[in-house]
Amino acid sequence: DNGNYITDTSSGLDWLKLNSTYGKTFNEITAATTSGAWLDGWKYATSTQWEGMLSNQGISPTNSCVNGTTYCGLVDGISSSSMLSLITLFGDAQSLPDPIDPYPEAVGMLADINQSNTQQQVALFLYDTTTFQEPGDPDWVYANTFAGSSTGAPYIGSWLIRATAVPEPSTLALMIFGFGALSLRKKKKV
Image (cartoon, rainbow, N blue to C red; front, side):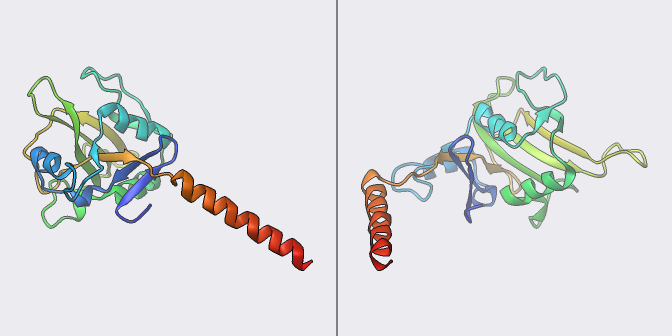
């Protein structure tokens, strides 16, 4: 957690938190990612990148998907409390003044176009303690990509990524030189 973004060290990608983009349309965010704009350096994640981020967290799908995606419902490999933490980390749409659903969820648009409605694909993960459950049933943990919208909504953000920044070679060399000088100085004192 780096404040307004999260670093996935497995993929080398930074993920912008969804609350930065709630309620903005696909076109508004695309314009904001151009050079010099407020989201310069960020771009829309693909469904493959989003699903890879889930896999990197140890989350695996339990269903066969007919929509061509890997995640389309219940998942394994993550506890209810860990899913709640992940939702909170990325941005819980339920925390907005007028949430659409009664359960915690992180939902945003992707780069992919859904062929059924030619809109942006939407991806979400959620933790549901209420829907279609009998007493004693476990809470449901979902991850899903589905036919979405490019118009945006107050509770829909955008899944944006960028390559994790690495130190410039000159900065790295200067840092190594500094550590070397410190170690020589320490040896001199002994």
